[in-house]
Length: 201
Image 1 (cartoon, helix red, strand yellow):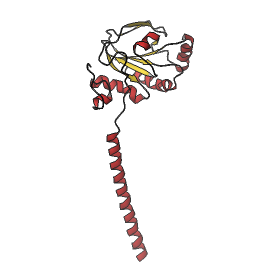
Image 2: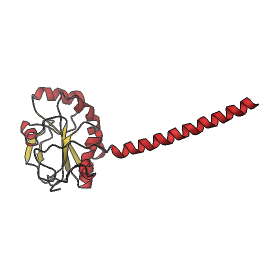
Image 3: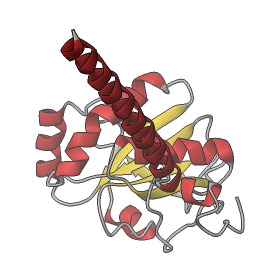
Image 4: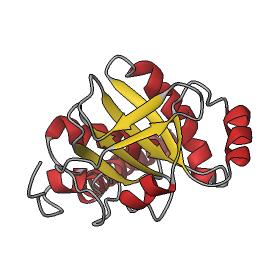
């Protein structure tokens, strides 16, 4: 009988100790979440800046959809996504781009852009099922936006003004461009006070 009482006391002590450990861990997780801020698209300082008008382009759609105009007044916003057939991260983001095209298609055009040998891009389009996207092949477009690493995206509003841009490595960073559009801030970092504000947004 004494042994059972002792065992119950030990078990309750262990339960209380575990509860204290769980509370301590929950507190530490909360502290970590406060310290680790969300990371948006990594903005470069070259090329048209957020809040500036994009240079004008009138380029043929490799998928046969006619010419695509960038940097001019439009009825819809435009997301220009720079990619390459040899970029593995680009390929992992294609399902997200397809999802965005389907869910945001009433106000947004998703445009793919690259440069290089046309035959390679044709095979890439067929292999990845990208026929529904406008597909631009232009070295000048990438140089104008100073695209040095891929994947890279630029979000233009209906007046052709850059509302978000940056190097994209995840769906969260891609969606941060839309957060920039909604908040009026160039990036999540700027919104949270971790980066200097843009001069013109």
